[in-house]
Length: 221
Image (spheres, rainbow, N blue to C red):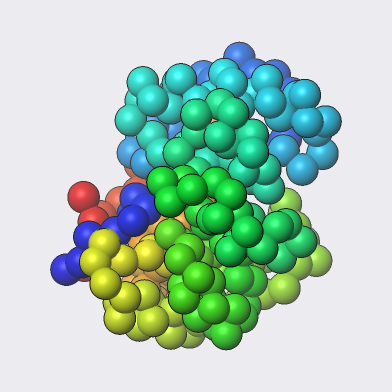
């Protein structure tokens, strides 16, 4: 089985919390439950707020052994020493980000329900391609829905790439109950916000989501 360029398993995505201390405590709990990567996603916050949280999260993620990414702002990712950045359709093109950020920054790309976009992003050097929403999402209730089949098709494309290969990430409405469906369909990782960070027991929720991937052949240690 080919090694991955992005960790398999649970990929936590931060909620819209202004309370940074609460967020740091929650990240520790999620990491204790098996979370392997974290994305700072603050769509509704000013850049200075995002920057302050990024500066707080970066050293914590290093301490916990988490891969840390910043959503939408690769320059901020570089500023704080994050491992990578996640970019969407409305952000700068992948080729420009890669050219300016350099070869070492992990870059993940949103592909929605579009396999053709996923193919292009793989050809452009994305470290992971993300599809979703896979299920109804409280964070983005009106977003496009992606079928499970797109994960299987994208996985076949990724498997054809040289090792270490890009990862396939699923996002949107993911819970411990439905995460196994994603792993079985070919996803390497699940990006989770609400059912992780709003769970009454964050560590237990992280462990349950992580177990879905540990139990499948898709999981990479």
